[in-house]
Image (cartoon, rainbow, N blue to C red):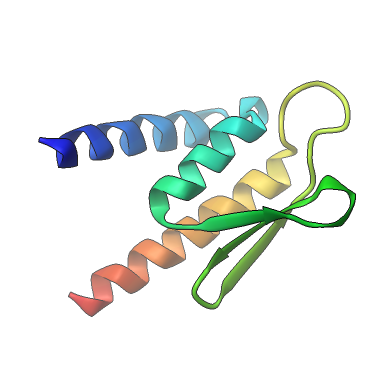
Length: 91
């Protein structure tokens, strides 16, 4: 049962981020990255750094407005694809 809740949350959030990368908040991005398995910490100047095994992604917080810049979203989505691809190869 919990697996379906996890997958539904992940799928909904991933679809939202994919469909509107210009309208993704930092909170949504952090949730998505955590659902995939990334851990994160705050770096210097409030930057967020996400880690997953050998993958490291840096994200600057939004300066104006409340949305993360699309370039950071694209980088995170590429990292998520890489993680999923690596996990599928192991199976």
